[in-house]
Image (cartoon, rainbow over all chains, first blue to last red; front, side, top):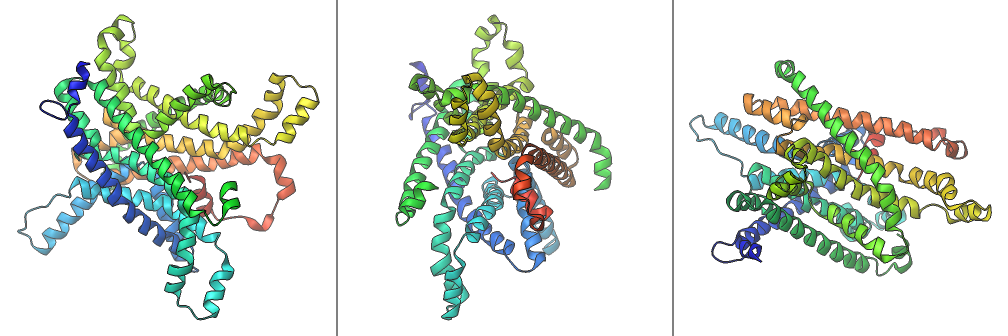
Amino acid sequence: MEWLSYLSFTGGGWGDELLRGLGVTLALAAASLPVGLALGLAVAALGLCRRALWRGLAASFSTTIRGLPELLTLFIIYHGVGLALNSLLKWLSPGATPVELSPFLAGVIALGLVFAGYSSEVWRGAWQSLDRGQLEAAQAIGVRRLTIFRLIELPQLLRLALPGLGNLWISLIKDTALVSVIALNDLMRMANVAVGVTKKPFLFFAVVCLVYWAICLLCEWGLARLEQRANRGFEREGRAA
Amino acid sequence: MIDILERFSGQLLSGAGLTLQITLIASLLAFCLSLPLALLRRSPSAAWRWPVRLYVSFFRGTPLLAQLFLVYYGSGQFRVPLTEAGLWWFFRDPYYCALLTFVLNSTAYQVEILRGGLRAVPSGQIEAGIALGLRKLELYRRIILPNAYRIAFPALGNELILLLKGSAVVSVITVLDVMGQTRRAFSQTFDLSVYFWAAVLYLLMTTIFVLLWRRLERCLTRHLHCRSAQPGKRRGLFTRLSTGVAP
């Protein structure tokens, strides 16, 4: 049972460090989600525009994002946005000290973009399966476009897109592990640090895997409950889907 | 930008070769392993079903990077017994560790895809086969498996693309795939266009793969086309590409 002492929350144990890393991981996922959801919805709306230019733009965004490894996207954002920021700063005031993009912010942008790329397809699919008659009825009685979206389309979109978005949320949690590579102190990196000190790689990486596994199982359970609730008016269709 | 390409094109291309090599070998091995496991997953006995279920759930519920670290660094904790067993040469090499991790990971995903495919085989066809007196092996070979693989085909293509993209994490354990070569070139030049060319390379690989897979799929389902051929419904390249990479 000596391995338990490595994981204790006091003194020389690494339990508290790992817990803090887990907090960063969850914060990163939670911060990327709204970015990805909103951006994905915007891209989906562009993809359903009448203008071919907007449609092409939306399609090339989601194709590009989904064709690139998440790790590459992360590096491009981390180094690219940092460089762009600094050259902009230099242009504005030549004497300014260079800033560094925080790994957390880079992670939020990169993971948000990845989530947007994938979720735009989910949103688009859900949007296309909405009943057009409802939209036309609302337009006929003179409801404004934004109100139609808020009161008629969005509630149904959420229900239809929930299964797809749930899967993406779980991949998002797993993708947060990549951000440890650009030195964000998340769960994965804390384990790396602990391994460097204790020389017990199997123990710590196994614990990390188990923690991620537990989070994913918990999310799956929660999403199943959420779907059940979202489909409560649609007993039969919900079960068939 | 062009000068960066001239300077590093050799490295990037050799990286692409390694990326493709890892992806193809791992997915082929996983392809072989997934069928028996998928059959076990559907076995009536819970003692067979549960281990497979746990395995699939674990590998789908943890990040690939964590799995890779568990295999590559984690094996270091058992260096002495592994050396005694004559296996240390395998776990010492990041390339083999990456391959092992990807095989385990991809097998888990492919088992789940195949399970869906097996479940979706029309039961009328299976019953017809039984009624004809086909033996179990014959039934699988002629009716169940061709149907299941045909149904699972698009999802298997997506899994291959996910693996191709996921393989970029091997750069973290010093394997020089596209990502590894890119990171090395970037650390030498601090020129962002290296990343641009790497992105182009990845997009090229995934696009060619998607087109190839579509062609194959059309070939596999050609008996279904004459019935539902809709000449007016040809979709644009963009939609075809983008639907092909969907998760």
